[in-house]
Image 1 (cartoon, rainbow, N blue to C red):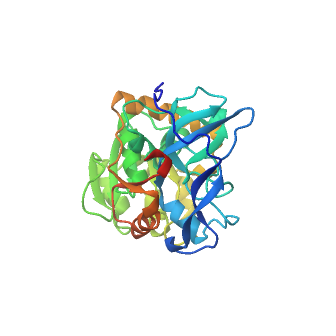
Image 2 (tube, rainbow, N blue to C red):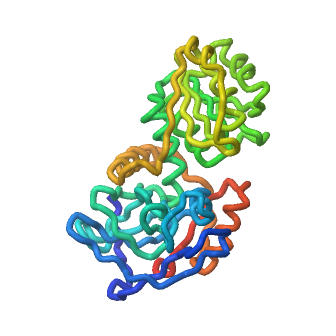
Length: 334
């Protein structure tokens, strides 16, 4: 367990800075506000946030997609150091909050309080900024491939939306578990280093997967796109194959041939990381820690921003198109 030798200078301060939105809208509705610094109760831990990632879901939260009660502090993923409560002071931790930014405040702030069973030691191999970039994408990929998909060595995994943050994480995890990866995306570049990369063309996806698997199809599909790619992904499964869906970027409603579905003995499951408990998140983060420490998993490129530039950073995430994760550095951690 990594333990920080330097604790924050302002522990005695009763207030802290937090990013907040009082109304739904574009990133410009965000402001930096003073909040009372939280106090841990029995069974809780006070963490000083040293870095916190901006995910696309955070932008959606500010825009009102999750109908969060207002006012609200957004943010889910963080890395920091324990400075009070029921854990060793100085312990460097990483995580993603259960319900953070939606049903409760955090983590785009300077301090948070979390249940003691929700914290996980940060991998020493990662910097604090890198550790903050892991949360949601790797939690989603792990929950889909390992928890729901039960990926096995030697299987073929089709990752639809392979160039996105979850897709890149999923490819790493699948390779760690000794599975073969076919990556599919509208982008032409194989940024995830999948074993084979193909176009995510709805009219040709299942045929291409069939060609690459000698007509068998994929054992497991992770569909991070949904919409028009949902049924083509489903048709790419082998007999008895499993498809895990985590999003639908266009149409919420999809259709598929139910007779083909049951004749193929296909299995379909959904994954929602917002439903994970703090303890479940900590267990997955501990599993991921092993992968990062052993070199099976690798942190994405990062771009850091001071709190004062949070609105600009949110706007960059809103535009999309960047492989880098955007990380806020709270003033108290600067």
